[in-house]
Length: 409
Ligand code: SF4
Ligand code: SF4
Image (cartoon, rainbow, N blue to C red; front, side, top):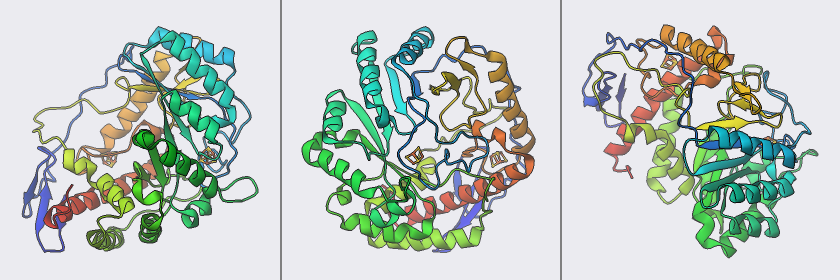
C-alpha cells in the first residue's frame, strides 16, 4: 500500500512488519496466514455487561438501527426489563464474571424511559458488588432532567450522550415521533452538567454520528462558536452502520482523498476546532499506535470470540457478543448460559470468510470488519472490503500528511 503526500513524498506500508518506509516498495507478494480455527468453551476476559434495559425510545432518529430499515434488527419495541429480570441477569453475571470490577452499561432504546429500573439496578449492583462495580449509561439525553442528572452523577454513573453537532445538524436526524428536533433538550442537559458539575465533565462521552463528511466543516465551525460546546470534545465520531437494505456506497479513492485533504487544510488553519481535532485523531489512531512487529509465521485471527471483554443482554434476556451485532445472532440466554456450539458456529463462519479473502489484503492489520459482518453475503463483503481498503489507505495518507505538517498530537 502506497501513498503520495501533497509534498510529493511517497511512502509505502509493509504488512509483514507494520512499518511505513520512504519510497515505493511493493509488498503485494507477501502472503498473510492464519492459524487454524480452534473451538473454544470459555470467555475468560468478560468484564462488561451491556444491558438493554428497554426497547422503548422517545426518539425516531432517521438512521437508527431500530428504525425498521435494517433487515435483521428489531424495530422500536415496548419490552423492558423488570426488577425480577434484573435480578436474574445479576445472578448470571455472578456466575460468569471472572474479572473485577464488574462493568454495567445501561443501553436501550432510551434507558432513561425506565429511570426507576436504572435506579433499582444501580442500587442492587452496589449491594452485590460494593466497591467493585462501575456504571455507564448510553442516552439521547432528552430525558436527563436536573433531578436525574444529580442522582446519576452522585452514583458515579458515567454518561455516553449522543449529540450530532449543533442544532442545525443534530435536528436533521435526531427527531422525535412527530419529527421535532431534540437538540435543545440535549443542550439543556449538557449545560446543566457543565455548569453544576464541571469536575464530572471528563466522565461524559459525547458520541457523534456523522451521516456525511460534507457537513463537517460547517458543523465544526458552528460547534466552536457555541458558548458551551466549544469547551467539549466529541469522544467518538462515527459514520452510519452499513445498511444493504437501502444502499451502501462504494467509495472512490480520488474523491475521498480530495475531500479529506480539503478538511485537513481547514484543520491546519483552525487547530482549536475540537470537532476537527477529534475527527482527525480518530482517523489516525490506529496508525499512531500500530504495533511494529515482524510476522514470520501464521497468526491467530483477531475475532471478538473467545477473547471478548463484553456481553450484550437484550430485554428477552438473550445473550449476544456485543450490542452492534444484529438481533438474529444470539449465543445463549441468561438461564442456560452461553451455547458454545452456536458461538463456535458463528466464529467459524466468520473465520472461513476471512481466510478466503484476506491473504493478500493490504488492510489486514487494521481491518475493522468484525463478526457483525457475518450477516452479509459475498457481494456485500466485496463492497465492505473495497471501502475498508480505501479507508486504510486514506488514513495512512492522513497520518503521513499530519506528520509532515506538524499536526501530530
Ligand atoms: S435515540 Fe438511539 S435508539 Fe432512539 S431512535 Fe435515536 S438512535 Fe434509535
Ligand atoms: S478488508 Fe476484507 S479482505 Fe481485507 S482484511 Fe478486511 S476482511 Fe480481509
